[in-house]
Amino acid sequence: MLATTLAGAASITAAALFSFTLLSRVVERMVSLSVGIMLSTSLLHALPEAFESGADPRTLFATLLAGLLTFFMLEKLAILRHSHHHEGDGHHHAHGHDAHEAGRAGWMILVGDGMHNFTDGILIAAAFLADPHLGIVAAVAIIAHEIPQEIGDFIVLLNAGFSRTRAYIYNLLCSLLAVAGGLLGYFTLDRASNLIPYVLVFASSGFIYIAVSDLMPQMQRRATMKETVPQVLLIALGVAIVLFLTAGRH
Image 1 (cartoon, rainbow, N blue to C red):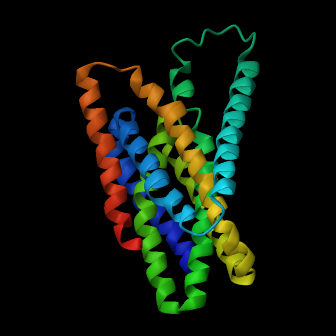
Image 2 (image 1 turned 60 degrees about the vertical axis):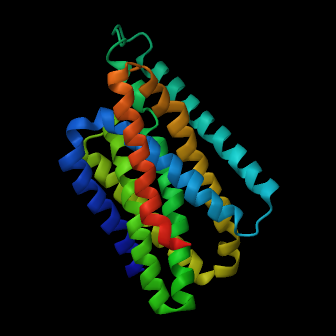
């Protein structure tokens, strides 16, 4: 419990300090970094780990499809709810909606992040049951690979209009799912470990959907060469960060 709590709180606090101090002034541009982080975390780390687990590939792909459709429906419900809330209120939202439309995935990323943290908790529990020293190493490794992901989450939340305090509290609450995953992994390890690949795939589907459906279209609206070059470089930087911090986990 201590390891899972520290893994969540330490990574989120480090990411918050970095995001709020160095990135808050350029959040809009740093959305590109978030795209690189989320796509590479999902496609180069989480999904390969799930498929290398020995789980049935067809079932994993079905889980990926279900996850993408689930996040599509969650976003659809959010759009319908927002449209109904403002229907007939007499206000014109053409420009004011930009931040909302661009960042409506802010709360959805918390769902995916919570699932990911839950899986991390199970992994930490499994490592501690195998060897306490391995458990400590696993917790440190998870902190390392969570920091760039949490930076990406903070960028999305700030871009969506969340205040710094609200973004930090929501992410911190999501990190508590690592404790829940750790407890579940400790007491029902065999069954929980069998679910890990599917939880990883579902969480990845959320990151992929948010990046491709919400953030990349937002970036495409600024299609000048002056904007494109930094976007490409920041996406590449996000990929490089994830590759560097997760290279030693396999």
